[in-house]
Each structure stands twice: as structure tokens, then as C-alpha cells.
Image (cartoon, rainbow, N blue to C red; front, side, top):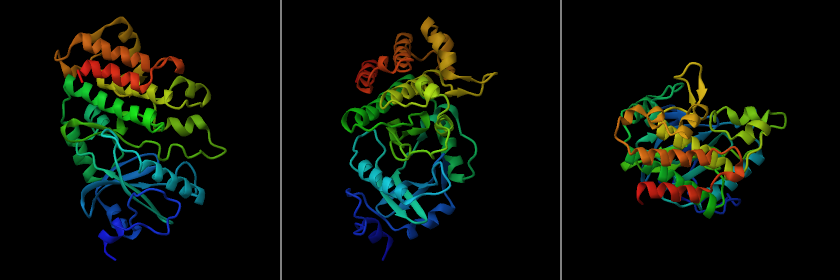
Length: 328
């Protein structure tokens, strides 16, 4: 049976799935994973893929998350997650296009971000990748200089995507960071990697703080760092506040350009509270930004990263505040 038929045929044996998301045969995907690497994460490797009726897509090959074995219960959980993800529809969420779950291959296929990640646009290419596609994509992303209007629009797009997850779908993200804000044509932003693997329980003997901090350094709220506790929705708001600081300052959440290396939050917060715009603003902006708007966006970031979860605003409130800055 041809690839097109496999991709669009409903898998009748997959009785656990309640979605209409296309299921495709793992045997047709295997050749894709020899070339066209986009990037690597803690739980997956992402490749550029061409599928029938989908000119370009991002195929995320899932690895073994946080343990030496992948159990049948993990597959059952993944199928449940697919059924949830397939029902999420919003202009600012990266859409799930299809999936494959086989004994030796587990793949989720998403929309392809033509521009790249917000992290790469702001900070340049990341290391530890060996794919030509990854290098070329990040070169294009690093060549961009975001204007003030583009930064505030990206912030609003991302906030609205998270607002939909929290308030309409009631789904926490659990991994908000600039690498999970993807940019498409026109620099429109969409939220990626929401609620797929991060809810898998860690091994019984795992150090919880170590499990989560590896890929989220600088984004973790204080309650998690103190007790390993993550509070649904409020933890996302905190992490989004750090992303806002990245947009404002052009610095990474864990700033390796400073000696000694410091957390962005620890460096930026005192400056924001003193209103010293010229000290925190991204130098790439030059003088092309409204000082009042910059202070206002900085104030929103400070509200998001409040030490007490209850004092943080909702994502709906955050989106509303940013909307007034953008004028939308």
C-alpha cells in the first residue's frame, strides 16, 4: 500500500484513540531519520519531512523519556495525549498533523516552522547539532533583527496560545521557553511542545529537580526549585515571564555571556524595578522602541515572575495587557 494511503487511512486497530488524527505507517518514516535533522531535545529528535499533501512538516521522533525502558503504559499514555492534542485548534498553537506509534518507532508530525524558534532568532544558533538542515535553518533565524513591533506581536501571539491552552482547553504546557515559541511566515508565533511528554511520571528513584531542570534552566519557578512542586497554569505564567524578559533584553534565560554566568531574572529584575530602560533593553533595538511601552512590558514580566504563584496573573490577563501595548 502506498505512502499516501497509509498516511490518510484510519488505523482500525488503534481502538484506544478517539481522534481523527491521521495514523501513518512507521516503515515509511524510517528513511527520513537519516538526514534533514532540525534539532534535538531531551526527549526527542526533530527532522524535516515531506509527506503526501504536506509539502513540509516537522517529524518528532520520540526517544526514551527519563528511563531505560519505554513501557506499554507509556504507549497508552502517548495515545491518550494524541487524542487530546488532536482536538486542540488555535491560530497560535502548532498543529499536530499525524502520528505513528509502533514497537520500534514513535513519531509525532507537526507543522513546520519556516522561520525557526524564538530562541534562535534572539540568541543565534544552538550547539550540539550535527544536521545540515539545522545549521541552515538557524543561520536564517540568526540573521533576523526583531523590531519592537515584531517583539510585542510575538509576545501577544504566544500569550494568546497559552491563554487558549489554559482557559479553553484546560491543558497546562509544563515547558514554556523560547525554544518552544516557533515562528512562521510573517513572524507569527505559535506555541509548540505542549503537554506531550512532560506529564510522563519520572522514574521512582529520580531526583525530581534534576529531571525537570535539565532543559528548563532559568525558566523554573521558585516553588519548583524549593520543593519540586509545579502548579498548573501558574508555573507556565512564570516561565512566560522569563520569555518576555528574553524579548526585552535579548539575553538568554541563563546568560552565558556574563562572567560569572547568571540567571536572566536575577540580572534584569533590579533594573526593571528601577526603571532603567537603557540598562536592560536589547542593544539590537538601538533607540527604536517606546520607553513607556518597554517599561510597561517589563512590568508585565515582573508580575508573571512573582515569587508567590497566587500573585501571578492569568494568561488571559497577560494577553489583555500585552494587547493594549500592541493596539490589538
